[in-house]
Amino acid sequence: MSRYQRGDVVRAPLPYMDENGIWRVKFRPFVVVDVDGVNDNITVSCTGQTHKSKNFPGISVLLDSDEGRKMGIDRDSFIYCNTTIVFVNKDIIRKIGTCPLMKEICEKLGYEYEGDD
Image (cartoon, rainbow, N blue to C red; front, side, top):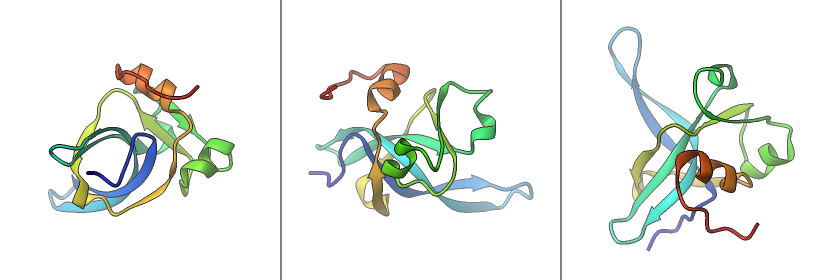
């Protein structure tokens, strides 16, 4: 069984290729949107810098907002709601917060929302 659940904000490695064609890794926050307890897979929505928000569907979260504080982010962020990434549970480093925007994220991603509000 996974130690993470929908709505957790986790930090995990994201590999990318730099401008010189070299693979690098950056550690980013992700919002858990689905957990597969059978295969131990965690589906997450990626976060990034807010300046890209005009190009993709998603939600901007300010560091100093109530949502930003609950999520444990360390800078203004943008939650991408156009795609998800799947991690194996063991690849996630740790939980850093909880996302209070799950209803909106799930609706934008086309996931069924099973929350309290």
